[in-house]
Length: 236
Image (tube, rainbow, N blue to C red):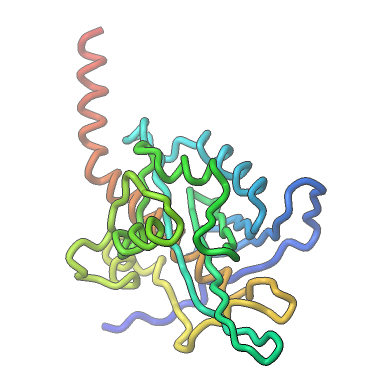
């Protein structure tokens, strides 16, 4: 039986955000019937570092008290520009991280130069569990193009049995079904900002990676954690 398409995805830019020290655009993104995500879009190293430091304070899974689960994606695409009648290829990149109801979209304008040292150390931290679809290929690209090695990468779709929509339906149920546009989503507005559609879909993907991983880890380790807690209580 085919699922009825649900209008459960939306994005809204927060226009009143002003900060003299941290440069970013903020959006509220609705994913599913009851999940609202605060998405920060930035190319500022300072903003990336601040976001990550706040994220590290979050313990998002009581079943894995020493781990931090992060939904992750990296996207690269070529854009063609004309300078003095010469066609040049300029690569734009996005690194997307999601922890709970918070998402970061980091704009990369210079491939080969991933400068925020805190982001590099964050991804290389073995306590950070980086999850996504096709994560091995993305991790390899990150290491090849930006010289950053993810220490603890987990692919949510081992064996390639599902696409994201199928995996979401299998693990989260129909409330999380990801409705994608049939046509390619444009990345940028004429102003240079990311389009609302790009913010929405990048946020939705990373957030769904996080939710799927959280659910699977809870299912796999929840009973083990409860058993260990019961043993500790029995010794007292």
